[in-house]
Length: 376
Image (cartoon, rainbow, N blue to C red; front, side):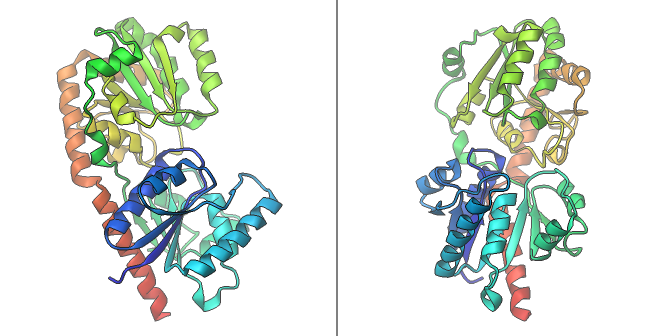
């Protein structure tokens, strides 16, 4: 196919699964010969990492959350100027604020309006009110991170205009020279500690409170268990308060935001992801598998696409501390079986969740959209 000019837009300031997916896609499409630019708020982690990879960026926007008319229209004006200057072939929007800004910015473009693809990253329901119906009626195609997202969007675009494309970790990030002993010593863990790690935004939907509620039962069976939460977010005060109420503050370590997650994996004996809603796939699980970590997770959204119960890990119902504690105890009791599942998870990721697949399948979606647009 001919080489395209592609714009990816992202509203998030902080790092997470969505910015990770955007940069993985952008890098893969650029490797296939396309020109790719990433639009995100000033100073966003996405911008910093894109620039470090040599990917073009546009950051002269705020993309403020909530309803801020003055900021919105400033963004619309600046994005409209950028779109007129750059003449993109296709635009891929990834969030709410950036989607609205792009749609408003393209009003009046007429026949020169590039098609818009919308990538959906979570399983939160989309309200089917008139404004959203208008917004989605102007989208040429929707890419979802897992098949489980598609049913939530039906009725907003015609049937057949959905494609599920898994996210994928970058295998190159997992060539770590540091040893397990070095990383654990830095974090203050003794050889006998069994470290249960969590990587993700500290937010209510991520279910850190459920894992903490399971912690007393886990500690009763394994007194040397320790809990390592990697990430930042608004739930941190609540997490610290809950740990204090349970009397386990000394068993919990909160690292805040870290860029060296694969290195921190070295300190872990088991990886847990316990969302209660919104999780479309769980990219952090894919990363844990590449680090050969056993995984226990809640059966939410597309988590089951990688955590196949009893094969690559253990799945439990969301919001249920007792089954979660039982699954973690089962893993800690049988490290041999846990290791087998971890290796099966790694093999699955290496076969079915690769950056090359994202780029190839996304490029194919863009080609279909552009072919249809040319035919009118």
